[in-house]
Amino acid sequence: MSLQRYFVKRLLVMIPVLFGVSILTFSLTKMLPGSPVDYILQFQETTPGLREQLEAQYNLNEPVYVQYWLWLRDAMVLDFGDSLISDRSVSGAILRRLPKTLLLGGGGFLIAVTIGIPLGVLAAVNNGNTIDEASRVGALLGIATPNFWLGLMLLLVFSVQLGWFRVIPPDMPTLSLPMLKFVILPAITLGTASSALIMRLTRSSMVEELNKDYVRTAKAKGLSERTVIVKHVLRNSMVSVVTVAAIQVAFIVNGSVVIEQVFSWPGVGRMLIQAITQRDLPVLQAIVLMIAVTIVFVNLIADLLYSWLDPRIRY
Image (cartoon, rainbow, N blue to C red; front, side, top):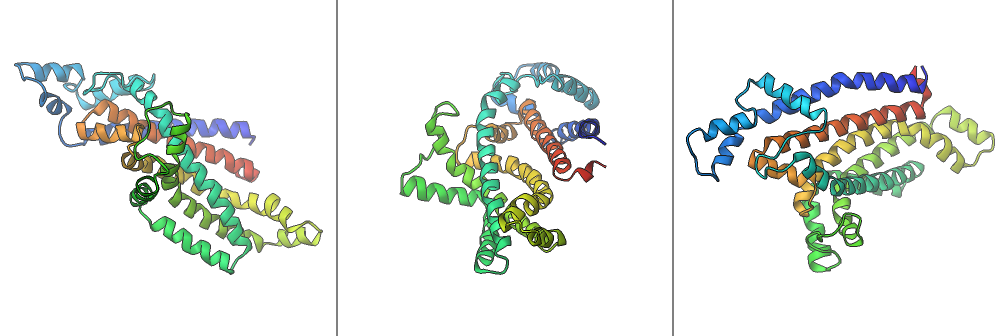
Protein backbone atom coordinates (compact mmCIF):
# COMPACT_ATOMS: atom_id res chain seq x y z
CA MET A 1 0.00 0.00 0.00
CA SER A 2 1.46 3.38 -1.01
CA LEU A 3 1.74 6.26 1.41
CA GLN A 4 -1.01 8.15 -0.43
CA ARG A 5 -3.47 5.26 -0.15
CA TYR A 6 -2.52 4.79 3.49
CA PHE A 7 -3.22 8.48 4.14
CA VAL A 8 -6.64 8.29 2.44
CA LYS A 9 -7.50 5.16 4.40
CA ARG A 10 -6.62 6.85 7.70
CA LEU A 11 -8.74 9.88 6.74
CA LEU A 12 -11.75 7.63 6.06
CA VAL A 13 -11.27 5.91 9.41
CA MET A 14 -11.31 9.33 11.10
CA ILE A 15 -14.87 10.09 9.95
CA PRO A 16 -16.65 7.75 12.43
CA VAL A 17 -14.10 8.75 15.09
CA LEU A 18 -14.92 12.44 14.68
CA PHE A 19 -18.63 11.63 14.69
CA GLY A 20 -18.21 9.76 17.97
CA VAL A 21 -16.17 12.65 19.38
CA SER A 22 -18.97 15.08 18.53
CA ILE A 23 -21.55 12.89 20.29
CA LEU A 24 -19.39 12.61 23.41
CA THR A 25 -18.65 16.33 23.43
CA PHE A 26 -22.31 17.28 23.17
CA SER A 27 -23.45 14.65 25.68
CA LEU A 28 -20.86 15.46 28.35
CA THR A 29 -21.58 19.18 28.26
CA LYS A 30 -25.29 18.45 28.54
CA MET A 31 -24.64 16.37 31.66
CA LEU A 32 -23.29 19.35 33.58
CA PRO A 33 -25.52 20.26 36.55
CA GLY A 34 -27.59 23.38 36.24
CA SER A 35 -29.06 25.18 33.27
CA PRO A 36 -27.42 28.06 31.42
CA VAL A 37 -30.77 29.85 31.46
CA ASP A 38 -30.75 29.79 35.28
CA TYR A 39 -27.33 31.46 35.24
CA ILE A 40 -28.51 34.16 32.81
CA LEU A 41 -31.65 34.89 34.84
CA GLN A 42 -29.52 35.65 37.91
CA PHE A 43 -28.48 38.92 36.32
CA GLN A 44 -31.78 39.93 34.71
CA GLU A 45 -35.13 40.96 35.98
CA THR A 46 -37.37 37.95 35.46
CA THR A 47 -40.52 38.64 33.49
CA PRO A 48 -43.31 36.26 32.47
CA GLY A 49 -42.23 34.19 29.51
CA LEU A 50 -38.57 35.24 29.64
CA ARG A 51 -37.38 31.73 30.46
CA GLU A 52 -39.37 30.26 27.56
CA GLN A 53 -38.00 32.97 25.26
CA LEU A 54 -34.40 32.23 26.20
CA GLU A 55 -34.85 28.47 25.86
CA ALA A 56 -36.38 28.94 22.41
CA GLN A 57 -33.58 31.32 21.41
CA TYR A 58 -30.89 28.73 22.21
CA ASN A 59 -32.96 25.67 21.12
CA LEU A 60 -33.05 24.37 24.71
CA ASN A 61 -36.77 23.60 24.41
CA GLU A 62 -36.11 21.06 21.65
CA PRO A 63 -35.51 17.32 22.21
CA VAL A 64 -31.88 16.41 22.85
CA TYR A 65 -31.39 14.72 19.48
CA VAL A 66 -32.74 17.81 17.69
CA GLN A 67 -30.41 20.02 19.71
CA TYR A 68 -27.50 17.77 18.73
CA TRP A 69 -28.34 17.85 15.04
CA LEU A 70 -28.69 21.63 15.00
CA TRP A 71 -25.40 22.00 16.88
CA LEU A 72 -23.57 19.50 14.62
CA ARG A 73 -24.90 21.15 11.46
CA ASP A 74 -23.52 24.51 12.55
CA ALA A 75 -20.28 23.05 13.95
CA MET A 76 -19.44 21.49 10.59
CA VAL A 77 -19.15 25.01 9.16
CA LEU A 78 -17.38 26.27 12.32
CA ASP A 79 -20.43 28.22 13.45
CA PHE A 80 -20.84 27.68 17.19
CA GLY A 81 -23.37 30.43 17.72
CA ASP A 82 -23.11 33.23 20.26
CA SER A 83 -22.00 33.12 23.86
CA LEU A 84 -24.84 32.94 26.38
CA ILE A 85 -23.01 35.42 28.62
CA SER A 86 -21.33 37.95 26.34
CA ASP A 87 -23.68 37.49 23.34
CA ARG A 88 -20.61 37.56 21.06
CA SER A 89 -19.57 35.07 18.39
CA VAL A 90 -17.99 31.99 19.94
CA SER A 91 -15.81 31.30 16.90
CA GLY A 92 -14.50 34.86 16.90
CA ALA A 93 -13.71 34.75 20.63
CA ILE A 94 -11.81 31.46 20.24
CA LEU A 95 -9.85 32.71 17.23
CA ARG A 96 -8.74 35.77 19.19
CA ARG A 97 -7.34 33.62 22.00
CA LEU A 98 -6.13 30.66 19.95
CA PRO A 99 -2.72 32.14 18.89
CA LYS A 100 -1.69 32.54 22.53
CA THR A 101 -2.69 28.97 23.36
CA LEU A 102 -0.79 27.70 20.30
CA LEU A 103 2.26 29.67 21.38
CA LEU A 104 2.11 28.19 24.88
CA GLY A 105 1.41 24.63 23.73
CA GLY A 106 4.00 24.81 20.96
CA GLY A 107 6.61 26.11 23.38
CA GLY A 108 5.84 23.35 25.88
CA PHE A 109 6.03 20.64 23.23
CA LEU A 110 9.26 22.09 21.81
CA ILE A 111 10.84 22.03 25.25
CA ALA A 112 9.63 18.47 25.84
CA VAL A 113 11.14 17.19 22.57
CA THR A 114 14.38 19.19 22.50
CA ILE A 115 15.20 18.21 26.09
CA GLY A 116 13.71 14.71 26.26
CA ILE A 117 15.18 13.13 23.11
CA PRO A 118 18.83 14.32 23.44
CA LEU A 119 18.94 13.44 27.16
CA GLY A 120 17.40 10.05 26.39
CA VAL A 121 20.07 9.37 23.78
CA LEU A 122 22.78 10.51 26.20
CA ALA A 123 21.44 8.23 28.94
CA ALA A 124 21.27 5.25 26.56
CA VAL A 125 24.81 5.73 25.30
CA ASN A 126 26.01 5.93 28.93
CA ASN A 127 23.84 3.02 30.09
CA GLY A 128 24.58 2.14 33.71
CA ASN A 129 26.87 5.12 34.29
CA THR A 130 26.39 8.14 36.53
CA ILE A 131 24.77 10.11 33.69
CA ASP A 132 22.15 7.38 33.26
CA GLU A 133 21.36 7.31 36.99
CA ALA A 134 21.14 11.10 37.14
CA SER A 135 18.73 11.14 34.19
CA ARG A 136 16.56 8.55 35.94
CA VAL A 137 16.31 10.67 39.09
CA GLY A 138 15.61 13.80 37.05
CA ALA A 139 12.88 12.02 35.08
CA LEU A 140 11.18 10.79 38.25
CA LEU A 141 11.22 14.29 39.71
CA GLY A 142 9.85 15.77 36.49
CA ILE A 143 6.99 13.29 36.27
CA ALA A 144 6.11 13.45 39.98
CA THR A 145 6.07 17.24 40.29
CA PRO A 146 2.55 18.73 39.83
CA ASN A 147 2.67 21.27 37.05
CA PHE A 148 0.56 23.85 38.90
CA TRP A 149 2.97 23.71 41.89
CA LEU A 150 5.98 23.99 39.60
CA GLY A 151 4.42 27.00 37.91
CA LEU A 152 3.79 28.73 41.24
CA MET A 153 7.37 28.06 42.36
CA LEU A 154 8.78 29.43 39.11
CA LEU A 155 6.66 32.55 39.52
CA LEU A 156 7.79 32.95 43.13
CA VAL A 157 11.50 32.59 42.35
CA PHE A 158 11.97 34.17 38.93
CA SER A 159 9.17 36.75 38.95
CA VAL A 160 8.64 37.81 42.56
CA GLN A 161 12.09 37.32 44.11
CA LEU A 162 14.49 37.80 41.18
CA GLY A 163 12.26 40.03 39.06
CA TRP A 164 13.43 38.49 35.77
CA PHE A 165 9.89 37.98 34.45
CA ARG A 166 6.56 39.73 34.82
CA VAL A 167 3.97 38.26 37.18
CA ILE A 168 1.13 38.80 34.71
CA PRO A 169 1.40 38.80 30.90
CA PRO A 170 1.67 42.14 29.09
CA ASP A 171 -1.22 43.35 26.96
CA MET A 172 0.69 43.13 23.69
CA PRO A 173 0.59 41.16 20.40
CA THR A 174 1.25 37.43 20.67
CA LEU A 175 4.62 37.42 18.89
CA SER A 176 5.97 40.58 20.50
CA LEU A 177 9.23 40.27 22.44
CA PRO A 178 7.67 40.85 25.91
CA MET A 179 5.07 38.12 25.26
CA LEU A 180 7.72 35.70 23.98
CA LYS A 181 9.77 36.39 27.10
CA PHE A 182 6.81 35.90 29.42
CA VAL A 183 5.83 32.56 27.84
CA ILE A 184 9.18 30.99 28.81
CA LEU A 185 8.11 30.09 32.36
CA PRO A 186 4.67 28.68 31.39
CA ALA A 187 6.26 26.67 28.56
CA ILE A 188 8.88 25.21 30.92
CA THR A 189 6.14 24.31 33.37
CA LEU A 190 4.07 22.70 30.65
CA GLY A 191 6.90 20.74 29.04
CA THR A 192 8.71 19.44 32.12
CA ALA A 193 6.68 16.28 32.76
CA SER A 194 6.45 15.45 29.05
CA SER A 195 10.20 15.87 28.56
CA ALA A 196 10.87 13.49 31.46
CA LEU A 197 8.59 10.81 30.00
CA ILE A 198 10.00 11.20 26.48
CA MET A 199 13.52 11.01 27.87
CA ARG A 200 12.90 7.70 29.66
CA LEU A 201 11.18 6.14 26.66
CA THR A 202 13.93 7.29 24.29
CA ARG A 203 16.50 5.81 26.61
CA SER A 204 14.77 2.43 26.89
CA SER A 205 14.16 2.21 23.12
CA MET A 206 17.75 3.15 22.36
CA VAL A 207 19.15 0.59 24.81
CA GLU A 208 17.05 -2.12 23.16
CA GLU A 209 18.21 -1.13 19.66
CA LEU A 210 21.87 -0.87 20.66
CA ASN A 211 21.88 -4.57 21.57
CA LYS A 212 20.65 -5.74 18.15
CA ASP A 213 22.75 -7.47 15.52
CA TYR A 214 22.58 -4.74 12.89
CA VAL A 215 24.40 -2.36 15.25
CA ARG A 216 27.32 -4.75 15.65
CA THR A 217 27.35 -5.33 11.89
CA ALA A 218 27.43 -1.60 11.15
CA LYS A 219 30.31 -1.08 13.57
CA ALA A 220 32.17 -4.06 12.09
CA LYS A 221 31.92 -2.44 8.65
CA GLY A 222 33.78 0.58 9.95
CA LEU A 223 30.95 3.06 10.56
CA SER A 224 31.61 5.49 13.38
CA GLU A 225 29.59 5.18 16.55
CA ARG A 226 28.01 8.59 15.97
CA THR A 227 26.82 7.57 12.49
CA VAL A 228 25.39 4.31 13.78
CA ILE A 229 23.51 6.03 16.60
CA VAL A 230 22.17 9.01 14.65
CA LYS A 231 21.34 7.40 11.28
CA HIS A 232 20.27 3.94 12.36
CA VAL A 233 19.60 3.42 16.06
CA LEU A 234 17.85 6.72 16.72
CA ARG A 235 15.54 6.41 13.72
CA ASN A 236 14.52 2.87 14.65
CA SER A 237 13.86 4.03 18.22
CA MET A 238 11.62 6.88 17.13
CA VAL A 239 8.52 4.73 16.45
CA SER A 240 7.91 4.27 20.17
CA VAL A 241 8.88 7.86 20.92
CA VAL A 242 6.43 9.23 18.32
CA THR A 243 3.65 7.25 19.99
CA VAL A 244 4.35 8.80 23.38
CA ALA A 245 4.93 12.25 21.86
CA ALA A 246 1.46 12.11 20.27
CA ILE A 247 -0.04 11.14 23.62
CA GLN A 248 1.88 13.95 25.30
CA VAL A 249 0.21 16.46 22.99
CA ALA A 250 -3.07 15.52 24.69
CA PHE A 251 -1.50 16.07 28.11
CA ILE A 252 -0.03 19.38 26.99
CA VAL A 253 -3.39 20.56 25.62
CA ASN A 254 -5.16 19.54 28.84
CA GLY A 255 -2.36 20.88 31.03
CA SER A 256 -2.46 24.25 29.31
CA VAL A 257 -5.89 24.82 30.90
CA VAL A 258 -4.31 24.72 34.37
CA ILE A 259 -1.13 26.56 33.37
CA GLU A 260 -3.06 29.40 31.74
CA GLN A 261 -4.96 29.88 34.98
CA VAL A 262 -1.77 29.86 37.08
CA PHE A 263 0.03 32.39 34.87
CA SER A 264 -3.10 34.41 33.95
CA TRP A 265 -2.36 33.57 30.32
CA PRO A 266 -5.20 34.90 28.09
CA GLY A 267 -5.67 31.73 26.06
CA VAL A 268 -8.41 29.26 25.22
CA GLY A 269 -7.80 27.21 28.38
CA ARG A 270 -8.66 30.11 30.66
CA MET A 271 -11.70 30.77 28.51
CA LEU A 272 -12.75 27.15 29.04
CA ILE A 273 -12.67 27.51 32.83
CA GLN A 274 -14.79 30.67 32.61
CA ALA A 275 -17.29 28.87 30.38
CA ILE A 276 -17.59 26.01 32.89
CA THR A 277 -18.22 28.31 35.85
CA GLN A 278 -20.74 30.37 33.89
CA ARG A 279 -22.49 27.37 32.23
CA ASP A 280 -21.80 28.97 28.84
CA LEU A 281 -22.62 25.86 26.78
CA PRO A 282 -21.81 27.19 23.26
CA VAL A 283 -18.31 28.22 24.35
CA LEU A 284 -17.79 25.04 26.36
CA GLN A 285 -18.90 22.74 23.54
CA ALA A 286 -16.77 24.56 20.96
CA ILE A 287 -13.56 24.42 23.03
CA VAL A 288 -13.99 20.79 24.10
CA LEU A 289 -14.68 19.78 20.49
CA MET A 290 -11.65 21.72 19.30
CA ILE A 291 -9.40 19.98 21.84
CA ALA A 292 -10.77 16.54 20.92
CA VAL A 293 -10.38 17.12 17.18
CA THR A 294 -6.83 18.40 17.73
CA ILE A 295 -5.90 15.19 19.54
CA VAL A 296 -7.45 13.07 16.76
CA PHE A 297 -5.47 14.89 14.06
CA VAL A 298 -2.26 14.68 16.07
CA ASN A 299 -2.70 10.91 16.19
CA LEU A 300 -3.20 10.94 12.40
CA ILE A 301 0.11 12.76 12.02
CA ALA A 302 1.72 10.20 14.34
CA ASP A 303 0.40 7.35 12.15
CA LEU A 304 1.91 8.99 9.07
CA LEU A 305 5.23 9.39 10.85
CA TYR A 306 5.13 5.68 11.72
CA SER A 307 4.86 4.80 8.04
CA TRP A 308 7.71 7.16 7.19
CA LEU A 309 10.00 5.81 9.92
CA ASP A 310 9.11 2.17 9.21
CA PRO A 311 7.53 1.57 5.73
CA ARG A 312 6.50 -1.94 6.84
CA ILE A 313 3.68 -0.38 8.87
CA ARG A 314 1.79 0.53 5.69
CA TYR A 315 1.52 -3.12 4.80
